[in-house]
Image (cartoon, rainbow, N blue to C red; front, side, top):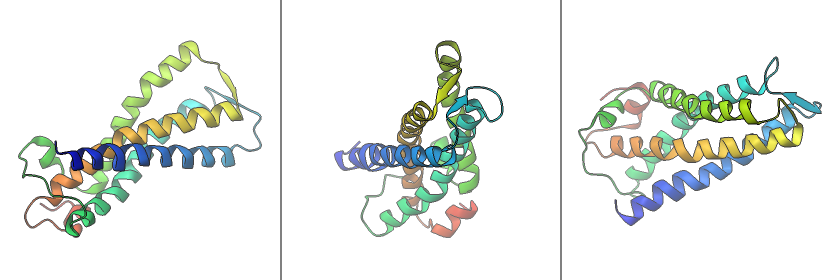
Length: 174
């Protein structure tokens, strides 16, 4: 992998989005739960459901936003195109952004499960708002840093194909 591609995927599409995602989700979590001095791990509302929903929705939204942005960067020459790939991952990109986003959302939920299992065994069953917000910042930051490079790579693969367009990426045409 070339240095510029490595930097693009790790820094531009990993570390920076991870940091931004964590801070934005922490602010949202704080604002939505401002009146709650404590939050339960299980129950209604519970942190388990919140984290699983976040683990699914965050990658879905990220896919819908990042995919067209990366393709535009390739089209404008801001990011170099890749050599054409014939792998299964490259073929997956011929599916719609919604479908890819849901697939990565399911991956996000798989990533969340060990975190939630560890918490259920070792963590407190009730947390303060500050503990919740801190955990949400770290969790969503790490999740964003893990899934965004994958989404960006898929977009790079797609944009590197002859005849690819932004319209076809959104609707799943080859």
